[in-house]
Image 1 (cartoon, one colour):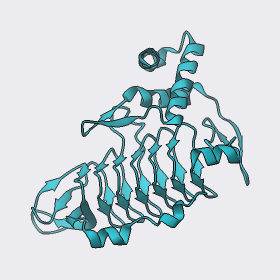
Image 2 (cartoon, rainbow, N blue to C red):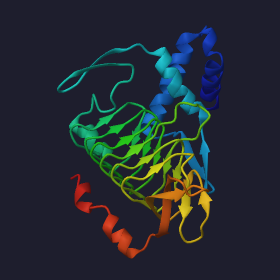
Image 3 (spheres, helix red, strand yellow):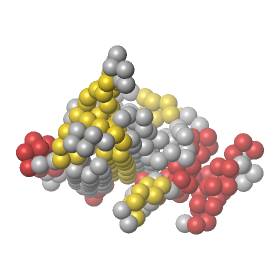
Length: 272
């Protein structure tokens, strides 16, 4: 793995000069994409409670775009012209049953994204480099951006947008930790982290510059929703009181009532 990382790092640093040994770089990039696709490696992982980003894997994804040419991709009702093949294009029934993923038409997953067992993909989109962990529901028209990390037993409601983070390459990916609920039409982008067990109401927009106001403490923070929080859309007044600007408001901690209203339906997970 260390040798693979070294080849990709060196190729990325010298990409403007071309690739003297193109075949070796292409092989390394394809191996990295295959490892991402299988879930053997991931762009970000938690170690001792802290998220660490494997930048070389993001660089492998970026290099893959430059090394590949667009080609025709066959679909059931259309044709496509792109550089990245679809993850399930060659799947047999046996392969689907082995993976244990429910893929509803027209769910689209690019090769290089990992989708774990017991995930349900409604008509949605999962981009290259993403990681979707076990028991998660990606609801209708939800999108999981490049290299985004989605935890276990997460519910991404209808129309949710989870941002990708291939540019800038040094940025951390957007992360939704285990047991979170993200409400309809909400957007979480720019490497924001929603910590474990949080519930985000519909229509909440979270980026690195979004103020996150804690109603109980009066504190304002950025870039992270604390574990077990309930977040809703809101506004904060300007210093002179002449206008107000959007913010996200943490109104309380998740309780039994909140969890009952946002729990996942086990019937959706019956894959047998």
